[in-house]
Length: 129
Ligand code: SF4
Ligand code: SF4
Image 1 (cartoon, helix red, strand yellow):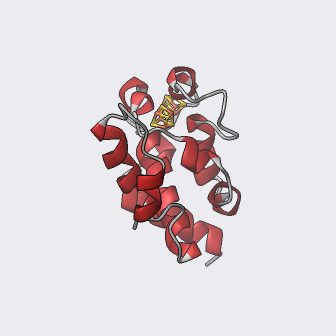
Image 2 (cartoon, rainbow, N blue to C red; image 1 turned 45 degrees about the horizontal axis):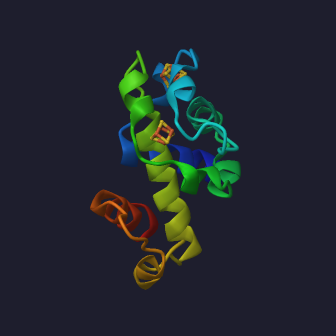
């Protein structure tokens, strides 16, 4: 089987997301707080997984710009949960690089005064295996 197709099935299995439920309404993207910065938006993630374009998504900086806020998950009228899909692809990209995007000891260097504890917890979830 084609590598992209295998990856597509794998990230759907890992995230529990069924991309075939998407009706392309764009509500997930309209509610995404990082819309302006992301090269690919939540609805595009869903659409590109459906079309087996994982190789493109795996290289995109959008993976690391998603805030894990799950606003898109809340907003989707079809229960597609695109934020979970983004997270599963990011984890797969990190795994394939055999390297973390950010190592735990680098997080300490990036701490700023008043940074909420939640941001640190999220960083560990996002950038470490
Ligand atoms: S979880 Fe990620 S993709 Fe979804 S709305 Fe939040 S920032 Fe955007
Ligand atoms: S909100 Fe849901 S149904 Fe609408 S485009 Fe996004 S994932 Fe698809």
